[in-house]
Length: 74
Image (cartoon, rainbow, N blue to C red; front, side):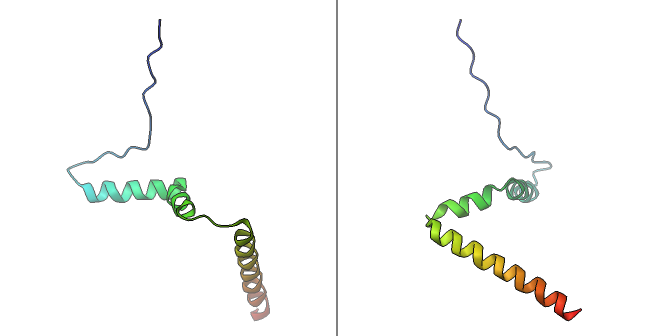
């Protein structure tokens, strides 16, 4: 008594009225919301841990300076 394999489930988009462009935009939006596009971009090239830390530190500094300038302008 072998089990039947489970059907694979993935992201699906229904194409209505042969409107491929709308379905394509909807699929891209779904993938963007799930973070798939960012994951693909991140895995495209290897980034050393030191580079990740430097980038995160620079982003934090940029956020901090932006917040500081907003407070100073008030």
